[in-house]
Length: 56
Image 1 (cartoon, helix red, strand yellow):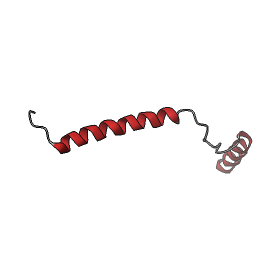
Image 2: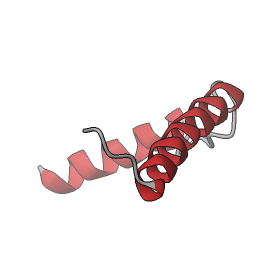
Image 3: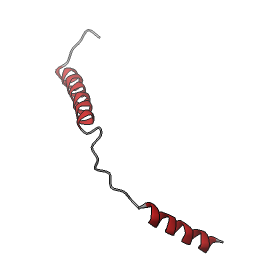
Image 4: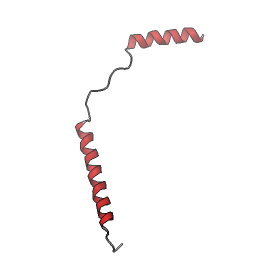
């Protein structure tokens, strides 16, 4: 392991930089409320009742 190549060093530093950027991105976007509700509870209950009726 005594040899050091420019490509190895670049890969090492780019890997560490990308990991750091991923951590920073995760911290910034941790609790952003961009999730949309798929179905409201009432429509879900209505659809479930219809499916139950259709099945049996």
